[in-house]
Structure formats: structure tokens, C-alpha cells
Length: 187
Image (tube, rainbow, N blue to C red):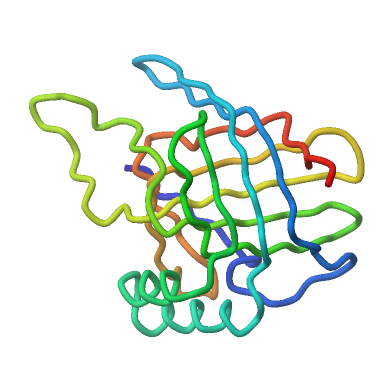
């Protein structure tokens, strides 16, 4: 397990500047992860049908801050569907959180699925790591004003408050999945 201290202000902040996100949107990307035992890659498709309104974002923020991860999961799973995430042509995973911020023409989109997408690591060993508690996936996409974007994905993760208004992301894998060639499909 790898813990990453992240100030996901986009997850726990309502402010946006610049353009307002317009759904539906579809994004494609190349996903890749490398480890000491090998590498995997595949196509990622993200279909956003709606962006999470402030009301639902506030409910999830309050749940995480006051009730921790179990309360956050409950609030997340009670939120309306925001889209789907498909990795390597596999199962469509339900997105319950989709939030965008813009700054200086650069878009940052954070997505949270209601279930894990993929467990990387742990493997088939004499003492595999427990998968308990890694019940969602978190994706962050960065898009500039032109050209392909980039991003990361924690395919099996959990979150917890950092006590300073941010979020600590615990990723099941030793390394985040790298997203490259992120592009918005034309409507």
C-alpha cells in the first residue's frame, strides 16, 4: 500500500474559475503502470454524463470530515451517477463523483468510482495483501488549452481526511497508474 498526501482541493472545494464544465463528455487515454515484476497497459475511456453539483460535493465532504471513510463511501454511493469508466474494454465502473476546476485555461477533472477498478500488486503470494477497505478508484485528469492531457489513477483506493482540509489517498498499488495522451472525444 502506498499513501499519498494529496490536497485534492478539487474534491473538497467548490470553487471553480474560468469555464464551466459541460457534460456529457467522453475522454480517452492510454493507461500504463510499471512495477518490479512487470508492466501493464490498456486503453481508458471515461464517459461523464454530469458533473457533481455543490450539494452532493458538500455532502461527501461533510461525511468524510465527520464520519471518516465509511460515511464518505455511503455518501458517494448515494450520489447520482455521473458517468462510467472503462479500462481495457472491460467492465464499466460507475462514476459517482466528477468535478472540474479550471485555472489559466488548464482543466483538472477528478473522478471517483463507487467500486475499485483493478487491484495491482498483492498478487498470488504466500501472504497476499488484504483488499479490504480499498473500495473505490480515483482518477485525476489534467488538460491544457491544446494538445493531449495527462493524469493518474489509483485503481483501488481509499481516502481519509488529512486534518487540514485535504485528503490522503491510500492506493492499494505501490505506484499510481499513469495516464497519457488524454483527449476529449468530439461530440
